[in-house]
Length: 357
Image: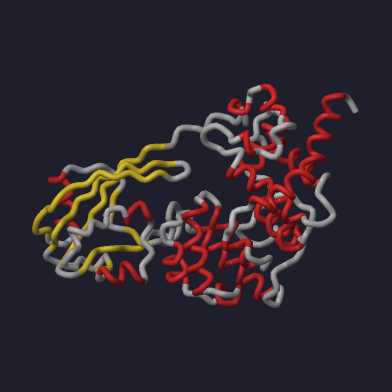
């Protein structure tokens, strides 16, 4: 083993002995850390994907109140499930939760699988989530390696390898698993996540002055913290122009279901088309749709960013004289209570326009 490898080996071996005590002292008080119930950890990990911790807290509590067990989740009405997920985005996460719950009920007598390899077979669960559940709930020495962990390791070891390469992630995972402690596997997993979330942060300067690894971090020693991690520049998102129609007829609002394939599959939406239209063109379209547009109240410009595409939207608020049968016309309280409307469309729900609905 050469000097570089010896240094790397030493750094990895010190991680559990330094980070676990730090984590036990400094861990945030989060609702999903109250117990080691696999359902709770699983739910939190799925919700936390692409979502901030503060945003997830309320969703997590409400979700468990309505679906306290895996059996309850398996039997849930999909529209109600998606309504509880409204605003979290990436709705297939919720659908996969239910698919996995049904599989656990039908194939494992309702008992959450206790081994990493079995957990990995559940719909919607990848290596990271399976590792988080296996280590946190069953004390299995399996690493959960995500962007936070890769950033922490890149800085501590001063690695300039591209963290978006699968081979790099695989290597980090293997090295971490080689130093997992015999007990407190979950605490070690959590400590790495926590360090990346609150100290070795993704945006802005890392908080090296309060980092338990400050004295050993090679990047900090060389002043290269903010140059790391290295990752390929993402491709520019595709830009798509859309026209959205916010239609009111009497006391009802027009919505419709999207197709079961593609972006936002099977979810509710405000009527819209994938082109930018002028006000005159918009009113002509509405006449063709049979809603008998009475008056255009106003326009609004909004945008919504998905992982791979950005919608640039022009919204037209229109008073209508007739309900077109191709759409669902619902009261505002139905929209609030039972219909899951993605954030891309919810941002058009203007209180002034709907005050009498």
